[in-house]
Image (tube, rainbow, N blue to C red; front, top):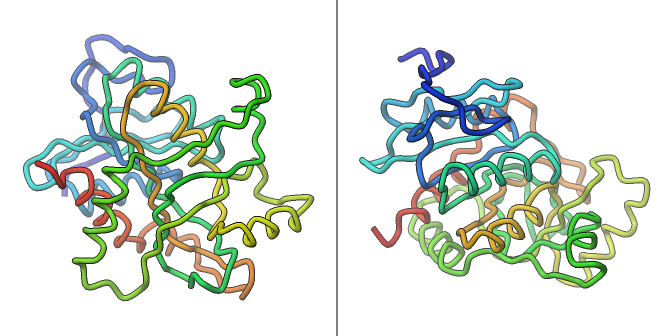
Length: 251
């Protein structure tokens, strides 16, 4: 196994927070929140993966999947953190596809622990888009082609757990002071809560890129079930298979 923590040599850095050289990052990027999950994905799913960034401990890797170049870049937690990396990926490295592969909390008994949620759209309590659109309500949605391909790929896999397509809620607070407000979203079709999708979908739309959020239910607000930190880091492989299959479905 190659040493994936050894960063590639660089002639010049292009961005503040990624610091990768031209050509280091593939046009297709999988984006987990946890940088250690980024390393696990690179080691588990990619061939010839090498680390192109260790800036602030937010690992990024590039390798190949079935001969296609793929990068995996950690985003950190929350929309402000993700927005930093997505802005640089889209503006400085000509990335055209970003698929978030993260964890989420189940909000309804319609979804179970370890189920996968394909987020068709992202509701949010964040002020980022309210500021951007001066109070207008913008609806951040997934790229339909990616969403359809992900659903098709999931249908073709022999998965142990269910896959759902529906709305997700991107919260600015992990420990919400008003959990009843998030719970109210369930009455309007929201399946799960996470912290990044709304910003990802908005930035992808701004830059003409494709984006999708594929999340595994790591804990359940209703039933109280939860997975361990190691399980969240290293065992959510189904969503990665779905994401990779969807990214290259038309190749």
